[in-house]
Each structure stands twice: as C-alpha cells, then as structure tokens.
Image (tube, rainbow over all chains, first blue to last red; front, side, top):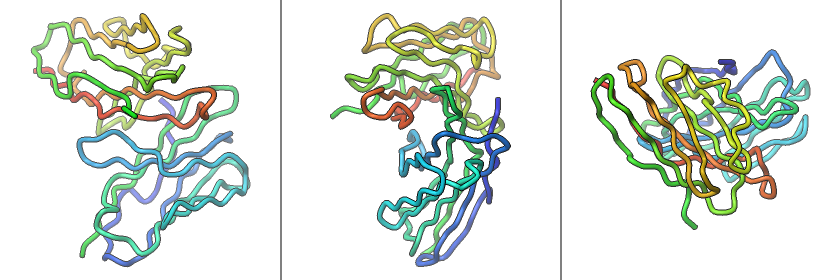
Length: 111
Length: 115
C-alpha cells in the first residue's frame, strides 16, 4: 500500500537535545497527524493539523502542516528519556476517511 | 473512559488454524478500522467500517481474511486458514464524525504468531 516517506529512520540523541523529523508525500493531504508508539502498545495521537501552514504545539512538541500540503514536520524540544518510541506521521487524502502512515522514526534518548 | 479494547493480546496458532481477533471500539464512535503492522510493510489499513457497514476492504490481503461488525460495539477479524506470513500485530482503531473523524484512537493490538 501507499506509504509516506518519513525521515530519519532512527535517531540516537542525548537527553536535553532537540529533535526534528519530517514526512513527505507525492500527493497532497487534507490532514496531517503525528502519533507515538511505545513497545507493546498501539499508536497514540500527539498532534493533529488541519490547515496548510498551521503550526501547532503540544507541550514540548511542535508540528507544522507544510504550505504545499505535501509535507509535515515534528519537533521535540529538550528531549527526555520518556520520549523514547517510534513516531509516525499520518496523512489523510481528500475525499477519504483513510489514513496513510509513514514508515516511522525510531527515537532513542540517552541520559 | 475505556479506550479501544482488543482481545486476545497475544495469539499463537499453527498454520491452517482459524484465528479470530476481536475489537470493541470506543462507545459512541461510528468508524472502526483494522490495521496490520509488520517490520517490512509498516502500518497497513486492512478494512474500515462506518456505522457497522464495510466501506473499503481494498487492503484485505486475500480471501482468507474476513471482517464483520454485527453491531456498533463489536467487530471481528478472521483469518481462515492462517499462514506463517500472517504473523503480525493487528490493531483496531475507532473515531467519530462528531469528534473529528481523522483522529483515530488505537487499541493495544493483538500480536499474532502463526507457526
């Protein structure tokens, strides 16, 4: 099935560092969402974006809906050990209720 | 509030056996999605329902897979006969039109191993 290009695939960072990851698509999307998945659990919604150019924050997390509607990024500031997990972007194409998921960014934070 | 409930959490079975995965969506949600997650293919949508009616089953891999939603609070995903390549984590997710139908809430998943 169709997937979004998400990068980087993995990140190994020191506690306190900032993190940035992004997703790109060849198609435009109506909605972008960012999820986090921890081992043995389902993905949990972090941020939802509905308008091109929209910048939304949730605590230390900030995400943006790209102007072209084909990309989105997620930033995590001052990372902490509990940020460890896999982060997925998801895009919702127009005229559909489906979500297309990115390939995920695995984040490891060292104290 | 209870989230999406899935059972069993783990299932180990032998090739050729029938497997039934169960899902209870969040109360009041009118959309239900079944996904499969593997290392190779990531998260794939298998099928989704709206108001208990299957809307899109284009992601169902083959006829061995079937899904039903007999009422608003219960859905099943059945694999018959199962094969080793069906080994994966299967997630159920739900959302509602009134909430924001794009913000899907996932269950904890069922880890299926077919020997």
